Image (cartoon, rainbow over all chains, first blue to last red; front, side, top):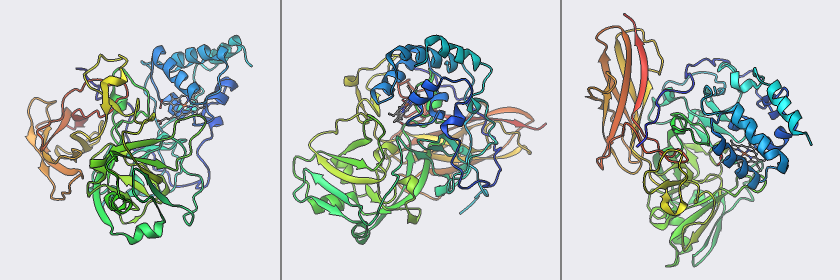
Length: 116
Length: 384
Protein backbone atom coordinates (compact mmCIF):
# COMPACT_ATOMS: atom_id res chain seq x y z
CA UNK A 1 0.00 0.00 0.00
CA UNK A 2 1.17 3.48 -0.66
CA UNK A 3 0.13 6.74 0.80
CA UNK A 4 -0.86 9.67 -1.32
CA UNK A 5 -0.10 13.08 -0.06
CA UNK A 6 -3.29 15.01 0.36
CA UNK A 7 -1.62 18.35 0.65
CA UNK A 8 -2.91 20.59 -2.04
CA UNK A 9 -0.20 21.34 -4.49
CA UNK A 10 -1.18 24.83 -5.45
CA UNK A 11 -3.13 27.40 -3.56
CA UNK A 12 -6.79 27.24 -4.38
CA UNK A 13 -7.44 30.78 -3.32
CA UNK A 14 -9.64 32.75 -5.64
CA UNK A 15 -7.43 35.48 -6.86
CA UNK A 16 -8.74 35.89 -10.38
CA UNK A 17 -11.60 38.29 -10.14
CA UNK A 18 -10.82 39.97 -13.43
CA UNK A 19 -13.64 40.50 -15.86
CA UNK A 20 -13.38 39.56 -19.50
CA UNK A 21 -11.10 42.16 -20.94
CA UNK A 22 -9.86 40.61 -24.10
CA UNK A 23 -12.56 38.33 -25.36
CA UNK A 24 -11.06 37.51 -28.68
CA UNK A 25 -7.45 37.24 -27.63
CA UNK A 26 -6.35 33.64 -27.70
CA UNK A 27 -4.45 32.60 -24.61
CA UNK A 28 -0.71 33.12 -24.67
CA UNK A 29 0.68 31.35 -27.66
CA UNK A 30 3.44 28.86 -27.32
CA UNK A 31 5.98 31.57 -27.97
CA UNK A 32 4.90 33.38 -24.82
CA UNK A 33 5.05 30.23 -22.79
CA UNK A 34 8.65 29.42 -23.55
CA UNK A 35 10.43 32.73 -24.03
CA UNK A 36 14.00 33.50 -23.19
CA UNK A 37 16.92 31.37 -24.11
CA UNK A 38 15.01 28.13 -24.37
CA UNK A 39 16.41 26.38 -27.39
CA UNK A 40 14.38 26.95 -30.49
CA UNK A 41 14.74 23.30 -31.37
CA UNK A 42 12.97 22.21 -28.24
CA UNK A 43 10.08 24.56 -28.92
CA UNK A 44 9.81 23.38 -32.51
CA UNK A 45 9.86 19.74 -31.50
CA UNK A 46 7.65 19.89 -28.45
CA UNK A 47 5.15 22.70 -28.93
CA UNK A 48 3.79 21.70 -32.28
CA UNK A 49 0.81 19.73 -31.01
CA UNK A 50 0.30 21.21 -27.53
CA UNK A 51 1.62 24.14 -25.57
CA UNK A 52 4.13 24.15 -22.77
CA UNK A 53 1.67 23.95 -19.87
CA UNK A 54 1.27 20.19 -20.16
CA UNK A 55 5.06 19.79 -20.04
CA UNK A 56 5.97 22.24 -17.28
CA UNK A 57 3.38 20.87 -14.81
CA UNK A 58 5.05 17.43 -14.71
CA UNK A 59 7.45 16.51 -11.88
CA UNK A 60 9.30 13.43 -13.07
CA UNK A 61 12.57 11.60 -12.65
CA UNK A 62 14.88 10.78 -15.52
CA UNK A 63 13.39 7.35 -16.21
CA UNK A 64 9.90 8.83 -16.51
CA UNK A 65 11.07 11.76 -18.67
CA UNK A 66 12.83 9.25 -20.93
CA UNK A 67 9.58 7.34 -21.36
CA UNK A 68 7.70 10.55 -22.13
CA UNK A 69 10.28 11.62 -24.68
CA UNK A 70 10.15 8.28 -26.45
CA UNK A 71 6.35 8.25 -26.41
CA UNK A 72 6.24 11.72 -27.99
CA UNK A 73 8.80 10.72 -30.63
CA UNK A 74 6.69 7.67 -31.44
CA UNK A 75 3.66 9.94 -31.71
CA UNK A 76 5.36 12.22 -34.18
CA UNK A 77 7.62 14.70 -32.36
CA UNK A 78 10.54 15.45 -34.64
CA UNK A 79 13.69 15.17 -32.50
CA UNK A 80 17.16 14.74 -33.98
CA UNK A 81 18.68 11.56 -32.58
CA UNK A 82 21.50 13.66 -31.14
CA UNK A 83 19.02 15.86 -29.28
CA UNK A 84 17.01 13.16 -27.55
CA UNK A 85 19.34 12.72 -24.59
CA UNK A 86 19.93 16.46 -24.34
CA UNK A 87 16.20 17.12 -24.15
CA UNK A 88 15.77 14.41 -21.50
CA UNK A 89 18.58 15.91 -19.45
CA UNK A 90 17.01 19.32 -19.82
CA UNK A 91 13.55 18.18 -18.70
CA UNK A 92 14.99 16.18 -15.80
CA UNK A 93 16.92 19.20 -14.58
CA UNK A 94 14.14 21.73 -15.08
CA UNK A 95 11.18 19.65 -13.86
CA UNK A 96 12.46 17.20 -11.26
CA UNK A 97 10.24 15.35 -8.78
CA UNK A 98 11.08 17.67 -5.89
CA UNK A 99 10.44 20.99 -7.64
CA UNK A 100 7.69 23.14 -6.09
CA UNK A 101 4.30 22.53 -7.71
CA UNK A 102 3.29 24.37 -10.83
CA UNK A 103 0.63 27.03 -10.30
CA UNK A 104 -1.97 26.86 -13.05
CA UNK A 105 -3.68 29.98 -14.40
CA UNK A 106 -7.45 30.45 -14.17
CA UNK A 107 -10.06 31.37 -16.72
CA UNK A 108 -11.70 34.72 -16.10
CA UNK A 109 -15.23 34.95 -14.82
CA UNK A 110 -17.90 37.54 -14.85
CA UNK A 111 -19.71 36.62 -11.67
CA UNK A 112 -19.97 33.79 -9.21
CA UNK A 113 -23.07 31.69 -9.58
CA UNK A 114 -24.11 30.55 -6.16
CA UNK A 115 -27.34 28.86 -6.93
CA UNK A 116 -29.58 27.65 -9.64
CA UNK B 1 20.83 22.11 -35.79
CA UNK B 2 22.05 23.41 -32.49
CA UNK B 3 24.94 21.78 -30.76
CA UNK B 4 24.79 20.21 -27.38
CA UNK B 5 26.92 23.02 -25.99
CA UNK B 6 24.63 25.75 -27.29
CA UNK B 7 21.68 23.90 -25.93
CA UNK B 8 23.17 23.52 -22.48
CA UNK B 9 24.27 27.14 -22.53
CA UNK B 10 20.67 28.01 -23.25
CA UNK B 11 19.55 25.92 -20.36
CA UNK B 12 21.88 27.44 -17.84
CA UNK B 13 21.06 30.86 -19.19
CA UNK B 14 17.45 30.32 -18.33
CA UNK B 15 18.06 29.40 -14.73
CA UNK B 16 16.53 32.01 -12.55
CA UNK B 17 13.39 31.45 -14.43
CA UNK B 18 11.96 33.11 -17.45
CA UNK B 19 9.40 30.38 -18.00
CA UNK B 20 6.61 32.63 -16.89
CA UNK B 21 4.07 29.91 -16.34
CA UNK B 22 6.19 28.55 -13.54
CA UNK B 23 5.93 31.73 -11.59
CA UNK B 24 2.70 32.92 -13.06
CA UNK B 25 0.51 34.33 -10.35
CA UNK B 26 -2.95 32.86 -10.14
CA UNK B 27 -4.46 36.31 -10.70
CA UNK B 28 -3.42 36.34 -14.33
CA UNK B 29 -6.63 35.03 -15.75
CA UNK B 30 -7.30 33.68 -19.18
CA UNK B 31 -10.36 34.70 -21.19
CA UNK B 32 -12.33 31.66 -22.28
CA UNK B 33 -15.95 32.55 -22.96
CA UNK B 34 -18.39 30.09 -21.44
CA UNK B 35 -15.90 28.75 -18.92
CA UNK B 36 -15.60 30.76 -15.74
CA UNK B 37 -13.08 30.62 -12.92
CA UNK B 38 -11.70 27.29 -14.10
CA UNK B 39 -8.18 26.01 -13.45
CA UNK B 40 -6.34 25.76 -16.78
CA UNK B 41 -4.46 22.46 -16.63
CA UNK B 42 -3.73 22.78 -20.33
CA UNK B 43 -4.78 25.34 -22.88
CA UNK B 44 -3.93 23.51 -26.08
CA UNK B 45 -5.19 20.74 -25.79
CA UNK B 46 -7.86 22.14 -23.53
CA UNK B 47 -8.05 20.61 -20.07
CA UNK B 48 -9.97 22.59 -17.46
CA UNK B 49 -10.47 21.69 -13.81
CA UNK B 50 -13.33 22.87 -11.65
CA UNK B 51 -12.17 24.53 -8.43
CA UNK B 52 -13.45 22.24 -5.68
CA UNK B 53 -15.37 25.14 -4.13
CA UNK B 54 -17.85 24.80 -7.01
CA UNK B 55 -18.81 21.30 -5.87
CA UNK B 56 -21.57 22.92 -3.83
CA UNK B 57 -24.48 22.32 -6.21
CA UNK B 58 -26.34 19.21 -7.26
CA UNK B 59 -26.12 20.21 -10.92
CA UNK B 60 -22.81 21.71 -12.07
CA UNK B 61 -23.39 24.64 -14.44
CA UNK B 62 -21.77 24.09 -17.84
CA UNK B 63 -19.56 27.14 -17.15
CA UNK B 64 -17.98 25.20 -14.29
CA UNK B 65 -17.98 21.72 -15.77
CA UNK B 66 -14.49 20.26 -16.21
CA UNK B 67 -13.12 19.69 -19.73
CA UNK B 68 -10.82 16.83 -20.63
CA UNK B 69 -9.47 16.67 -24.19
CA UNK B 70 -6.80 14.26 -25.36
CA UNK B 71 -6.28 16.14 -28.59
CA UNK B 72 -7.68 19.06 -30.58
CA UNK B 73 -11.40 19.75 -30.62
CA UNK B 74 -12.97 19.56 -34.11
CA UNK B 75 -12.07 22.81 -35.87
CA UNK B 76 -15.00 22.75 -38.28
CA UNK B 77 -18.27 20.93 -38.13
CA UNK B 78 -21.12 21.21 -40.59
CA UNK B 79 -24.15 19.85 -38.76
CA UNK B 80 -26.09 19.45 -42.00
CA UNK B 81 -23.44 16.99 -43.20
CA UNK B 82 -22.83 15.37 -39.83
CA UNK B 83 -24.02 11.78 -39.43
CA UNK B 84 -23.85 9.23 -36.64
CA UNK B 85 -23.06 5.86 -38.19
CA UNK B 86 -23.79 2.53 -36.55
CA UNK B 87 -22.03 -0.43 -38.06
CA UNK B 88 -19.85 -3.45 -37.44
CA UNK B 89 -21.58 -6.58 -36.15
CA UNK B 90 -25.09 -5.38 -37.02
CA UNK B 91 -27.79 -6.56 -39.46
CA UNK B 92 -28.56 -3.13 -40.88
CA UNK B 93 -25.92 -0.39 -40.70
CA UNK B 94 -27.37 3.08 -40.13
CA UNK B 95 -26.34 6.68 -40.62
CA UNK B 96 -28.54 9.12 -38.72
CA UNK B 97 -28.76 12.91 -38.86
CA UNK B 98 -29.07 15.11 -35.79
CA UNK B 99 -32.73 15.74 -36.65
CA UNK B 100 -33.37 12.00 -36.76
CA UNK B 101 -31.71 11.52 -33.38
CA UNK B 102 -33.81 14.34 -31.94
CA UNK B 103 -36.97 12.61 -33.19
CA UNK B 104 -36.22 9.45 -31.21
CA UNK B 105 -37.45 8.97 -27.65
CA UNK B 106 -35.27 11.15 -25.43
CA UNK B 107 -34.12 10.02 -22.01
CA UNK B 108 -32.50 12.18 -19.33
CA UNK B 109 -29.87 10.81 -16.98
CA UNK B 110 -28.30 12.85 -14.19
CA UNK B 111 -24.75 11.61 -14.11
CA UNK B 112 -21.60 12.42 -12.20
CA UNK B 113 -18.79 12.37 -14.71
CA UNK B 114 -15.28 12.03 -13.33
CA UNK B 115 -11.99 11.73 -15.17
CA UNK B 116 -10.17 8.53 -14.26
CA UNK B 117 -7.11 10.67 -13.52
CA UNK B 118 -8.84 13.03 -11.08
CA UNK B 119 -6.45 13.33 -8.11
CA UNK B 120 -3.41 12.27 -10.12
CA UNK B 121 -1.44 15.25 -8.78
CA UNK B 122 -1.43 13.56 -5.36
CA UNK B 123 0.31 10.39 -6.57
CA UNK B 124 3.63 9.70 -4.87
CA UNK B 125 5.88 9.18 -6.72
CA UNK B 126 4.46 11.54 -9.37
CA UNK B 127 3.08 10.06 -12.55
CA UNK B 128 2.87 11.76 -15.95
CA UNK B 129 -0.43 13.09 -17.25
CA UNK B 130 -2.71 16.07 -16.65
CA UNK B 131 -1.99 17.02 -13.03
CA UNK B 132 -5.61 17.08 -11.84
CA UNK B 133 -6.14 17.82 -8.17
CA UNK B 134 -9.75 17.48 -7.02
CA UNK B 135 -12.05 18.97 -9.63
CA UNK B 136 -12.00 16.80 -12.76
CA UNK B 137 -15.56 15.88 -11.81
CA UNK B 138 -19.04 17.35 -12.22
CA UNK B 139 -22.71 16.41 -12.38
CA UNK B 140 -25.02 17.22 -15.28
CA UNK B 141 -28.37 16.23 -16.71
CA UNK B 142 -27.64 14.58 -20.01
CA UNK B 143 -30.42 14.03 -22.51
CA UNK B 144 -30.71 12.13 -25.77
CA UNK B 145 -31.68 8.78 -27.26
CA UNK B 146 -30.71 5.58 -25.52
CA UNK B 147 -27.78 3.83 -27.17
CA UNK B 148 -29.85 0.66 -26.81
CA UNK B 149 -32.56 2.03 -29.10
CA UNK B 150 -30.00 2.80 -31.79
CA UNK B 151 -28.44 -0.63 -31.47
CA UNK B 152 -31.88 -2.25 -31.64
CA UNK B 153 -32.65 -0.42 -34.86
CA UNK B 154 -29.41 -1.63 -36.38
CA UNK B 155 -29.87 -5.15 -34.99
CA UNK B 156 -26.82 -6.42 -33.11
CA UNK B 157 -25.60 -9.78 -34.38
CA UNK B 158 -24.86 -12.50 -31.80
CA UNK B 159 -21.14 -11.98 -32.40
CA UNK B 160 -21.41 -8.40 -31.04
CA UNK B 161 -19.66 -8.23 -27.66
CA UNK B 162 -18.28 -4.70 -27.43
CA UNK B 163 -19.33 -1.30 -28.72
CA UNK B 164 -16.70 1.10 -29.97
CA UNK B 165 -17.00 4.89 -30.23
CA UNK B 166 -15.08 7.13 -32.60
CA UNK B 167 -15.18 10.91 -32.25
CA UNK B 168 -14.19 13.87 -34.37
CA UNK B 169 -11.19 14.90 -32.26
CA UNK B 170 -8.42 16.09 -34.58
CA UNK B 171 -5.47 13.78 -34.19
CA UNK B 172 -2.05 15.41 -34.56
CA UNK B 173 0.98 13.67 -36.08
CA UNK B 174 1.13 9.92 -35.49
CA UNK B 175 -0.85 10.08 -32.25
CA UNK B 176 -3.25 7.14 -32.00
CA UNK B 177 -6.89 8.23 -32.32
CA UNK B 178 -8.98 8.49 -29.18
CA UNK B 179 -11.10 5.38 -29.71
CA UNK B 180 -12.37 3.16 -26.90
CA UNK B 181 -15.04 0.49 -26.43
CA UNK B 182 -17.44 -0.68 -23.72
CA UNK B 183 -18.90 -4.15 -23.19
CA UNK B 184 -22.27 -4.79 -24.87
CA UNK B 185 -23.99 -5.26 -21.48
CA UNK B 186 -23.23 -1.68 -20.50
CA UNK B 187 -24.03 -0.42 -24.00
CA UNK B 188 -27.59 -1.81 -23.88
CA UNK B 189 -28.22 -0.60 -20.34
CA UNK B 190 -31.23 1.72 -20.58
CA UNK B 191 -29.28 4.60 -19.02
CA UNK B 192 -26.40 4.64 -21.52
CA UNK B 193 -27.09 7.50 -23.89
CA UNK B 194 -26.09 9.25 -27.05
CA UNK B 195 -26.51 12.64 -25.40
CA UNK B 196 -27.47 15.71 -27.40
CA UNK B 197 -28.26 17.93 -24.42
CA UNK B 198 -26.53 18.94 -21.21
CA UNK B 199 -28.44 20.70 -18.43
CA UNK B 200 -31.36 21.33 -20.75
CA UNK B 201 -29.44 23.01 -23.55
CA UNK B 202 -27.73 21.66 -26.65
CA UNK B 203 -24.21 20.38 -25.90
CA UNK B 204 -21.50 23.00 -26.20
CA UNK B 205 -18.45 22.38 -28.33
CA UNK B 206 -16.18 21.67 -25.35
CA UNK B 207 -18.60 18.98 -24.22
CA UNK B 208 -18.98 17.19 -27.53
CA UNK B 209 -21.50 18.98 -29.75
CA UNK B 210 -23.47 17.66 -31.58
CA UNK B 211 -23.45 14.28 -29.83
CA UNK B 212 -21.52 12.48 -27.13
CA UNK B 213 -21.85 9.14 -25.47
CA UNK B 214 -22.72 9.11 -21.77
CA UNK B 215 -21.83 5.91 -19.95
CA UNK B 216 -23.26 6.55 -16.47
CA UNK B 217 -21.16 5.75 -13.43
CA UNK B 218 -18.07 5.01 -15.51
CA UNK B 219 -14.82 6.92 -15.95
CA UNK B 220 -15.18 9.96 -18.21
CA UNK B 221 -13.04 8.38 -20.94
CA UNK B 222 -15.88 5.95 -21.69
CA UNK B 223 -18.15 8.84 -22.66
CA UNK B 224 -16.73 9.69 -26.09
CA UNK B 225 -17.31 13.30 -27.26
CA UNK B 226 -18.12 14.47 -30.81
CA UNK B 227 -19.15 10.88 -31.50
CA UNK B 228 -19.69 10.13 -35.17
CA UNK B 229 -19.07 6.42 -35.40
CA UNK B 230 -20.49 3.57 -33.34
CA UNK B 231 -19.23 0.16 -34.24
CA UNK B 232 -20.21 -3.18 -32.74
CA UNK B 233 -17.18 -5.45 -32.33
CA UNK B 234 -16.69 -9.09 -31.46
CA UNK B 235 -14.05 -8.14 -28.88
CA UNK B 236 -12.66 -5.21 -26.92
CA UNK B 237 -11.28 -2.49 -29.21
CA UNK B 238 -7.54 -2.84 -29.66
CA UNK B 239 -5.95 0.60 -29.46
CA UNK B 240 -3.74 2.80 -27.31
CA UNK B 241 -6.55 4.25 -25.18
CA UNK B 242 -7.84 0.77 -24.26
CA UNK B 243 -4.39 -0.71 -23.78
CA UNK B 244 -2.03 0.35 -22.29
CA UNK B 245 -4.24 3.41 -21.63
CA UNK B 246 -6.93 3.40 -18.93
CA UNK B 247 -5.97 0.11 -17.34
CA UNK B 248 -5.54 -0.79 -13.67
CA UNK B 249 -3.03 -3.33 -12.34
CA UNK B 250 -4.66 -6.59 -11.22
CA UNK B 251 -2.41 -6.70 -8.17
CA UNK B 252 -0.89 -3.84 -6.21
CA UNK B 253 2.49 -2.86 -7.65
CA UNK B 254 5.48 -1.22 -6.04
CA UNK B 255 5.47 2.54 -6.50
CA UNK B 256 7.42 3.39 -9.63
CA UNK B 257 7.32 -0.20 -10.87
CA UNK B 258 6.51 -0.90 -14.52
CA UNK B 259 3.39 -3.00 -15.04
CA UNK B 260 2.90 -5.80 -17.54
CA UNK B 261 -0.23 -5.03 -19.62
CA UNK B 262 -1.22 -8.70 -19.44
CA UNK B 263 -1.65 -8.19 -15.72
CA UNK B 264 -4.12 -5.30 -15.97
CA UNK B 265 -7.81 -4.72 -16.61
CA UNK B 266 -9.70 -1.74 -18.08
CA UNK B 267 -10.83 0.96 -15.67
CA UNK B 268 -14.65 1.04 -15.78
CA UNK B 269 -16.89 2.16 -12.89
CA UNK B 270 -15.91 5.04 -10.64
CA UNK B 271 -15.07 4.37 -7.01
CA UNK B 272 -16.68 5.77 -3.90
CA UNK B 273 -15.35 9.25 -3.23
CA UNK B 274 -16.22 12.50 -1.46
CA UNK B 275 -15.05 16.10 -1.68
CA UNK B 276 -15.21 18.97 0.77
CA UNK B 277 -16.43 22.06 -1.11
CA UNK B 278 -16.33 24.33 1.90
CA UNK B 279 -14.58 25.50 3.90
CA UNK B 280 -11.72 25.88 1.43
CA UNK B 281 -8.35 24.35 2.09
CA UNK B 282 -6.16 26.91 3.80
CA UNK B 283 -9.12 29.11 4.77
CA UNK B 284 -9.15 31.31 7.83
CA UNK B 285 -12.80 31.05 8.81
CA UNK B 286 -14.55 33.99 10.47
CA UNK B 287 -16.62 32.22 13.09
CA UNK B 288 -16.33 29.07 15.19
CA UNK B 289 -19.69 27.86 13.84
CA UNK B 290 -18.74 26.13 10.63
CA UNK B 291 -20.91 24.67 7.89
CA UNK B 292 -18.91 21.86 6.33
CA UNK B 293 -20.35 20.70 3.03
CA UNK B 294 -19.53 18.80 -0.10
CA UNK B 295 -20.52 15.99 -2.42
CA UNK B 296 -20.05 12.22 -2.59
CA UNK B 297 -20.53 9.73 -5.41
CA UNK B 298 -19.92 6.05 -6.07
CA UNK B 299 -20.15 5.28 -9.79
CA UNK B 300 -22.81 2.61 -10.27
CA UNK B 301 -23.42 2.23 -6.54
CA UNK B 302 -25.35 4.45 -4.17
CA UNK B 303 -23.96 6.61 -1.37
CA UNK B 304 -24.81 4.96 1.92
CA UNK B 305 -23.26 7.51 4.27
CA UNK B 306 -20.73 10.29 4.56
CA UNK B 307 -18.77 10.90 7.74
CA UNK B 308 -16.82 13.96 8.77
CA UNK B 309 -13.87 14.22 11.13
CA UNK B 310 -12.79 17.53 12.59
CA UNK B 311 -9.89 16.11 14.57
CA UNK B 312 -7.64 14.73 11.83
CA UNK B 313 -9.43 11.38 11.72
CA UNK B 314 -9.57 10.41 15.40
CA UNK B 315 -13.36 10.59 15.63
CA UNK B 316 -16.06 10.68 12.94
CA UNK B 317 -19.57 12.13 12.87
CA UNK B 318 -22.27 11.34 10.32
CA UNK B 319 -22.97 14.10 7.80
CA UNK B 320 -26.47 14.81 6.61
CA UNK B 321 -27.27 13.73 3.05
CA UNK B 322 -29.39 16.10 0.96
CA UNK B 323 -32.71 14.96 -0.46
CA UNK B 324 -31.70 15.42 -4.08
CA UNK B 325 -30.95 11.91 -5.15
CA UNK B 326 -30.57 10.30 -8.53
CA UNK B 327 -28.86 7.10 -9.52
CA UNK B 328 -25.35 7.85 -10.89
CA UNK B 329 -25.40 11.39 -9.47
CA UNK B 330 -23.43 12.65 -6.52
CA UNK B 331 -25.18 13.33 -3.24
CA UNK B 332 -24.65 16.62 -1.48
CA UNK B 333 -23.87 16.39 2.22
CA UNK B 334 -23.40 18.83 5.06
CA UNK B 335 -22.35 18.93 8.68
CA UNK B 336 -22.57 21.78 11.18
CA UNK B 337 -19.69 21.99 13.58
CA UNK B 338 -18.81 24.36 16.36
CA UNK B 339 -15.06 24.48 16.82
CA UNK B 340 -14.34 24.18 20.56
CA UNK B 341 -11.62 26.81 20.42
CA UNK B 342 -9.47 28.77 18.02
CA UNK B 343 -6.60 27.08 16.28
CA UNK B 344 -5.69 24.96 13.28
CA UNK B 345 -7.87 22.02 12.32
CA UNK B 346 -7.79 19.28 9.72
CA UNK B 347 -11.24 18.33 8.46
CA UNK B 348 -11.75 15.03 6.65
CA UNK B 349 -14.68 13.54 4.73
CA UNK B 350 -15.20 9.87 4.05
CA UNK B 351 -18.00 8.21 2.07
CA UNK B 352 -19.31 4.64 2.11
CA UNK B 353 -21.30 3.14 -0.76
CA UNK B 354 -24.17 0.64 -0.96
CA UNK B 355 -21.70 -2.16 -1.77
CA UNK B 356 -19.97 -1.57 1.55
CA UNK B 357 -16.88 0.15 0.15
CA UNK B 358 -15.50 3.01 2.24
CA UNK B 359 -12.98 5.56 1.00
CA UNK B 360 -9.55 4.44 2.14
CA UNK B 361 -6.81 6.48 3.83
CA UNK B 362 -4.44 5.29 1.15
CA UNK B 363 -4.69 3.43 -2.15
CA UNK B 364 -2.12 1.33 -4.01
CA UNK B 365 -0.01 3.35 -6.44
CA UNK B 366 -0.64 2.76 -10.15
CA UNK B 367 1.46 4.03 -13.06
CA UNK B 368 -1.15 6.44 -14.44
CA UNK B 369 -2.63 7.73 -11.21
CA UNK B 370 -6.14 6.42 -11.96
CA UNK B 371 -9.11 6.20 -9.57
CA UNK B 372 -7.44 7.81 -6.59
CA UNK B 373 -10.26 7.98 -4.04
CA UNK B 374 -8.59 8.56 -0.68
CA UNK B 375 -10.51 10.46 2.03
CA UNK B 376 -10.63 14.17 1.32
CA UNK B 377 -9.13 16.73 3.64
CA UNK B 378 -8.85 20.47 4.16
CA UNK B 379 -6.86 22.41 6.72
CA UNK B 380 -8.44 25.52 8.21
CA UNK B 381 -7.67 28.16 10.79
CA UNK B 382 -10.30 29.12 13.36
CA UNK B 383 -9.89 32.49 15.13
CA UNK B 384 -9.37 32.52 18.90
